[in-house]
Length: 431
Ligand code: GLA
Image 1 (tube, protein in one colour):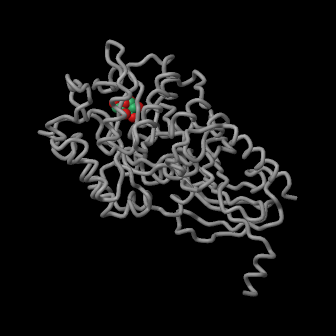
Image 2 (cartoon, protein in one colour):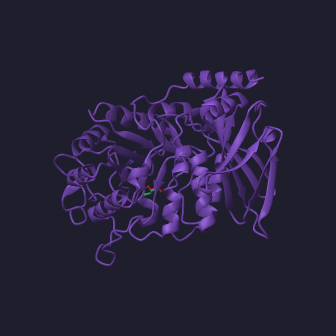
Image 3 (cartoon, protein in one colour):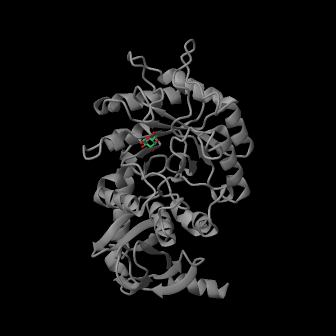
């Protein structure tokens, strides 16, 4: 009865084995943490925005909040610097990147020490081309000089734990060789540094070579920058749905597609849409990098970001990129197979997303076997509501319907299905 499912799983595992991924042992589950870009962008005006400019104080404040407000405890441990942290030129003698003296008076090493003292990790930002997107020095000089080795050594000496390498001011055709060069430089730096590439984001619609990208990068952006709006989030959802058959193949422990930052707690998403972003990012096993102001975030947003049951879906050790199995008239269903696997049957996370922008909340109902191909009939499936403290809300067989009422305008319901075999229940009763 479970043979079909087992064959599918075996084929999937064999396929995954054949896809070689960057093997530096890092980020075996999707990275979690914080990144400055979407919320703070390239604000370098510390006179008018003392608390919001890109400065060591901002990253220290965020590190403090991550620890004091419970984010670290649920897994958010990277503090990632983004663009605009350097001086406009390299050091004329050493050719090293130099942190802006005014905004980072103690330098990056001191900031890394501070972040580490809190039990957190520090990420930094560079660019594979001649300049970063904000116009700061990139890893290649205007004269073609290659600074990968110098930069990787510098980051390692400073105690940096992660590098996002952007792709502005570079010829996209050369990325095939340029991105691997930094990967090698990081590997030879003597420090374990996570490598996040923006490589396929500069090749949208041009069939990026994901096999190669996954060989050299720990995670990679593949679509446009997220902005503080639901329109931006839905454009990302649509991109992931469109390319899911390709993306799913190269996604797994140590090698992740990155749909970009979580914008939960900013100004652009309703509470319902914030739940939707968290649900989808969890279903995709995507990096969970918040870009928000943790010093002033509202309690309900914090609750979404710290939902342990949904984080557990995101961090599931199989690391499968969940896919869209239904989409019609604004209603979407997304499914992710995960652990535990009981007698060959997976646990599943399911999201019902309602994108309809008119009318009352909708009752959405699908037969389980129509959502999950080959779902075996023997066990029953316990249904837990992940946005209601994992309350048990049903016990279904594969030919019964999962029926949930979902609000409109980008709202979700998210459940976990766990297989329960009759024999196990009897055993449990006896114990
Ligand atoms: C690009 C990236 C963003 C951000 C900016 C910084 O647009 O995609 O995530 O890093 O550059 O300038």
